Image (cartoon, rainbow, N blue to C red; front, side, top):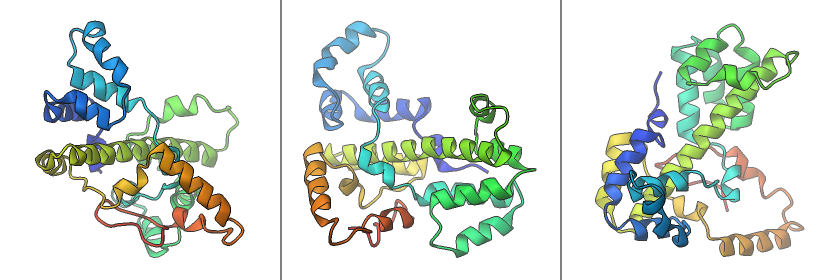
Length: 244
């Protein structure tokens, strides 16, 4: 079972994005906060590559903002896993439980799948394009099968989570670049919508410092205020709910 997530942030995707960036790549990569001092070295160091491809490749190496790591519950990722459970693993019983319980977060879901999918875990890994052997080779030989499956699924999730937010940041950059037609072209081709709330997730370092300071002051009044961020699934087409 395929997912639109499989088509983003790979070589073909970056080549497509590079064409959309065009000759004003310096302005675009400044929006993406790449070090402008490096721009002059790109052509000299990589004469056979376009500056657009070099910039995108360098940008893909940058980690996500720390605040995004807590937003783990993305509908597109969950939907892909559920479709694979139903269509490839023939475990609609598991997907039905997950769909009915809105309180389950991604950690709960991975734990449940790892516990229940044992005989068909190879089918699960294949459908999700998980390179399970290279992952499990780093685990002790005595590692229980549930822990092995959990590790593989967490590795898969981390990759999808990273690619999803990188995709959303690119759409945001094109919007800041006043290239609405590029956004429409990307969405039409890759079938993942633009999040309406994406800007609030990509805050400047100064904004994050201010928020962290405010959160520290609020701890005494609401010690559990962080819980709702983990428990709510969000999709590209809808804003977050119950998240301050």
